[in-house]
Length: 255
Ligand SMILES: Nc1nc2c(ncn2[C@@H]2O[C@H](COP(=O)(O)OP(=O)(O)O)[C@@H](O)[C@H]2O)c(=O)[nH]1
Ligand SMILES: [Mg+2]
Figure 1 (cartoon, rainbow, N blue to C red):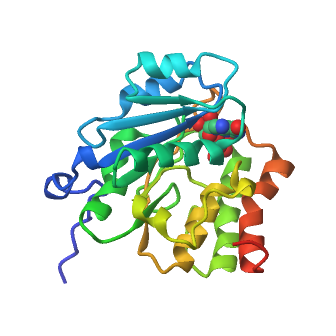
Figure 2 (figure 1 turned 180 degrees about the horizontal axis):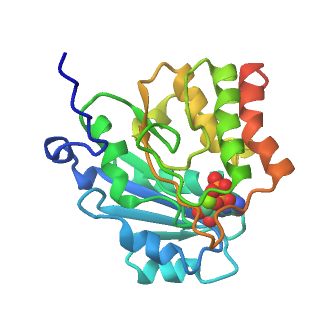
Figure 3 (figure 1 turned 90 degrees about the vertical axis):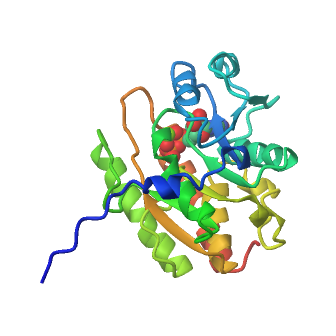
């Protein structure tokens, strides 16, 4: 029997050609990310996304100025610090207001690789999925420099997510994902709720998209641990924030 050739992780040129950058916004939530946010904005290939929206969550440093200087098309600054979920929400609403159809989300602390955007965009443009969740744990994903505690925490979380949702996700806390903005018109997906302001919004969106029977896939991506500050999460307080959407939605305590 002939061995099957290994499939490349990178989408073929034919598939990449499907991407229409004018229909894509990359949303980057950022809080105190000077020294990193400029690199993130510069690295986003405009051939995949014509609009980069940085949401500065009331940073005490010059995150907004650095994003602007690096060429972000839209920079929005919150008057008060509200949390990463609120930042993403602000960016999504702006993308919708601009009439954009697809949103990709990348972290503002330079952990993701914008060159990998086709991995999460191609299935959307090919009409194969409504939401693509990036996964560092799928074959082809990578976690250079990951500390041991992050490794086990980011592997434990998807197990809990699977138990609560029944969906075989391998990486529920990865901040790199892309989806059709039309999902936000679904009355079952209520991103405006205040309890989603911090780390809750991202797992909430994934959970509700699963429940809504949207077509969801994962794609392998890189998450770099570069030693210049990769998380602001506090173990107990913020750990509960990523868990509570699973508990509340599973038990029907919130919608
Ligand atoms: N922790 C935190 N991050 C925020 C906030 N607002 C925006 N962010 C951004 O959200 C992104 C993800 O946050 P991070 O703590 O690195 O999450 P993690 O990498 O998933 O552990 C980063 O780009 C932050 O700058 C906020 O109020 N708190
Ligand atoms: Mg981070």
